[in-house]
Length: 232
Image 1 (cartoon, rainbow, N blue to C red):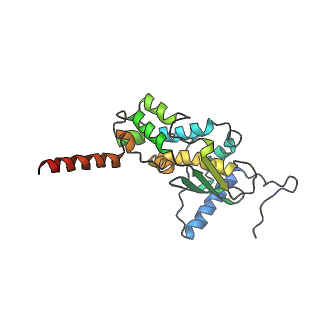
Image 2 (cartoon, rainbow, N blue to C red):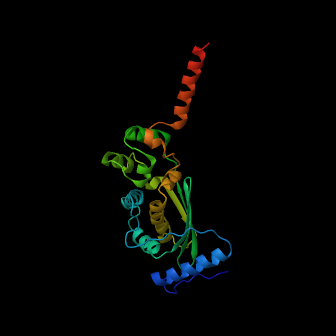
């Protein structure tokens, strides 16, 4: 069994500097890659974790809740030092590996956006988003941005909709490894903003027209059936 690096005085893991974590992360990536793992590390260039609308909006939403404010600073430090060596986004779920004193497994689950809320968002944005490119690049009107980022009715999740686990021994509700992953999501959205909609389990193309494509297809089919019947 591997021994964790605990301090004899307070029984907490010993402090590991950012430089040491970075070296450990690089070694862990190399080791797992040699074994065939397909890792997708989070890489942050500069001080700002996120640079685009979707990444910045994710981080801003995260920082707007008092539930998280005590643990977020350490998470920022970890993600900037390259400690999140793998981050995979799936529908309603994020799985990640974070290097601390050891390599820890983190899982974040996010409740699916309610259908009624999604319908209301589409209606509020109908006709105001010109193209898929504009949506993903965050080239949106101030009105659409307010609609999307509204804490009560927007697209971003509240703490009550988020659950997370980490394999580390910390007892905090949100450990620094989870906090690093939460920021890592923001950084990843800079690269692939469409993953935000994957995470929220919605079809982002519906925001462009405000109409459910399946519903639109049904209407077209109904019109065709009526037209065909009139020919007979």
